[in-house]
Image (tube, rainbow, N blue to C red):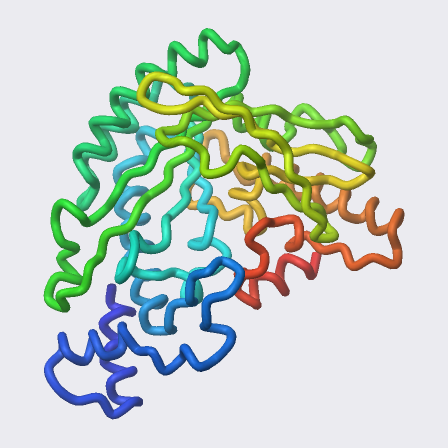
Amino acid sequence: MQMANDLLALWSEIDGITGNEPDRFRQLYYDRRFDRFAYYAAGRSNRRRPGPFESAIETCRRLRDLNALRRNLTTASLHAVLGGSMSYGRFLNISGSKSDHGSDTDLLLVLGDYSSLPSLVSALRKVGGANHADLESMQARSVIHMSIRLSLKQPCSFSHKITFWDEEPDPWMNPYDVPGHYRLSVHVFSLTDFEFLILKDTPVLDGQDDGFQRILFDYRPDRPDHRLDHQRSFGGTSLFLDRPFDKAQLGFLSQSRACVIRNGRYYPGMFQNLILPQFEIRWEDQLSPLHVQLSGFRWKIVERLRKERQLRPYELLRLSLSHTRSFIFAPHIARSVDGL
């Protein structure tokens, strides 16, 4: 949090803000001067973009908590991939909980086997700020997931949401009297199911034709917001596919496509979008490193993109456009991704 402390001091000096530290912090955190710019106004997501100071502070807090997770979870999880806005929009799109729960942190965890789920929950109990009721629910649901997985005999991930800093105040934020709660969205895969997600058994994607798809089940704690999965191609065209779900004990069992090829276009699904566009490994087991497998998946995607560019030379096809949240990518992330 040294960066957050330095930002407060420097920003106050640059803007000529005086007074005690809590007042200066709140003036910068609730700064509305940027609202007059279209870039910060509410757009397609119907949420205003946070100001630079707010986003920087909230990013620092989440990175601090991710480091705490890493210290406690490396014995329980083999690998962790950071997705969502904390990967493609940190220091730009990360909002606090002034009016809602703030930006989630999306973390994809890979276990050797789902039997390690209880030990994962035990490790999470050691992390400061985690909501105890959410962890108790996660513990109970981990047992149910095992029976669901055995009955399905198909890949089935485990998802859960854990609220941070609502039962106790964030020690760093407490002096400023600013709410600091946010949610950690955990998506847990066994190594086998993760390899299914990243198409390890498919040597190349550029040879796959219409009809190719990967169906993946997910045992989640809440009802899906929509009955349709929104997936996008490299050209930004949208595909809406049925996402059937059933009520399950302490949650819902939903079915979605990890990816699909329609009309000669590749559409990654929600969980592949957690990996794209950054392929950001937060930690990995050194005895069985994940970066080798993710590198293979990355180049399969790139080769598929090249094939589609050959088939449609007059279309603008970009890797970033295949992500349903590409319109809020940090500009440097989009440039880096599309420079492949």
